[in-house]
Image: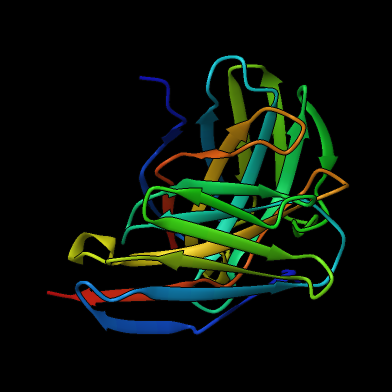
Length: 113
Length: 110
């Protein structure tokens, strides 16, 4: 049963700490999206990759956020330093290029205190 | 900023009734998709309609697309309590971005 796997599922950290969220896309998918979901802003697209290359990360605060795909089986989203306003659920999704459906992971619920 | 706007924000109906949710967008699209999210879970894809299509069906779901008005609607017929969830439209634009609306929270009362 192919699925997108995100780790950790929950993370509580102190302000100023580095946070790394990981995503294993479905094998064979060549497009990966990172989203942030909050009550106020809804689902915001932070970054997306095609064939491991970043295509757009304009939705991401550049000074503290970074997204990478070290290989086809791993995407990472890092926040350094974290701030309370980063508290949200972060979703990774993968799919095929060309506009087909996206498959979502279960999300990482981040709380920065 | 997000490019999908949905209404209503919340909808409460009785089991057996139909539920209609609307989505408007601002840019050209490749396709428009609808997703469902149960509380505390990831999003699940429901249906995709291409920019050259006007209507699509899948089980109890019916989606329409009007590209001249930049709008879409999702109809769930004969709703069930298990349909209670948030529903999101998402536009897949020509730049390859998948951008979501704010969602409609549907409550189906038994």
